[in-house]
Amino acid sequence: MSDKKKPTPEQKKYQKLAKNIEPKRPVFRNVILAFLVGGFICVIGQALTMMYMKVFDFTKETAGNPTVATLVLISVILTSLGVYDKMAQWAGAGTAVPVTGFANSMCSAALEHRSEGLVLGVGGNMFKLAGSVIVFGTVAAFFVGICQLIFGTPGGH
Image 1 (cartoon, rainbow, N blue to C red):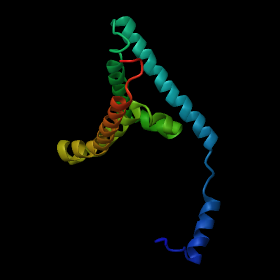
Image 2 (image 1 turned 90 degrees about the vertical axis):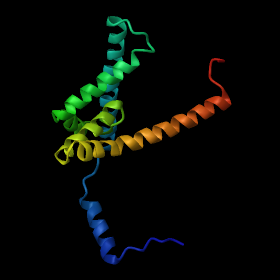
Image 3 (image 1 turned 60 degrees about the horizontal axis):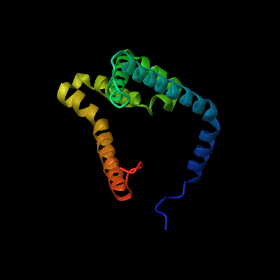
Image 4 (image 1 turned 45 degrees about the vertical axis):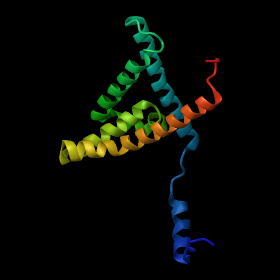
């Protein structure tokens, strides 16, 4: 038994009208843009990793942390200048998936609520998003660790 009510004739008429008026989404274009922009952000990340390895003598394993920090810094600067949001409107999900999208979300929340004060405005609203990401990331890491413990690690460690 469904809890959903059947739409009234007026609601059905409105839904039909809205469907006819709603602009069609260019799905293929959006997918291509997301792929290209997300890929370009990853290419920048790879270039940063290689730069840290060549210029600063990092290893492949240790170059990841400064690469992520640099990408986050670039994202925060571009968000503060209003550039990242314009790029995200144009490119869609391609800017949301990499770590830069997370940094953009946190910076946007901080900028939006700065008039409410540092603790309740910036801190309180910025970490609404970060808190859920950290919790789900930690839970996912826990389950991956359990699976790794049960099934072993590749390479025979």
